[in-house]
Image (tube, one colour):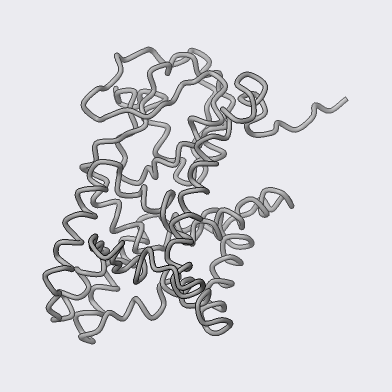
Length: 301
């Protein structure tokens, strides 16, 4: 008789209960939907908590927040940001230096809801094949957006940025914005696992540069307890960041230092052995030896 297929997260749910095995996912969804809602209740219900969008916003009439990637594009395009924009950038950069640059992708960006839905459906219907594209492609995309901004004197990327287009689509209805978002969804569903966010998005690439210096990290205080279930690799949108810390590759400490970790917390959720938790880069857990089984495969691309 063939064994039943392994269900990702089933061991964690059995050991910890459903809520403990999904709490970071629930909190992320609440954060993403809640942030999006604060932008939409103004034009929809005339309740102006926040004015603007994720590029530039003004909260409660006192708090300016500016996307640092937008400001860099403005500078290379030869434009002069206003003083409030600089203040907003300073606040945003300081925040992500603490919580992790790619935390924007998993806790704030509304497009992540779309790409995660594509990944869920891809898994549900059993699509196995995936195109191969280097994850460094996103940095080439980032460079290209800045070159185009410099040559054109405009913030050209914002005409195609799915994050901005999602806001426009929700506010102004069906149009080109929805075509772009549908293309992102179909690309992640049929062409490449975590294709847009993990391989192409210049926004995530930019925030990973901030993430190199961020304080909050996923640490592995119980690294030796790993039972090789591979659930953490299955749920991680950037699975390549896990292996060095989990397997002590080249003597790596039990802490994920890769700038492309999104601090989404899913590895913490689905681990039945509580190998992972959130911590700080300055409080690295005492090293523990890797599991002796050594059966871990390479992380999915």
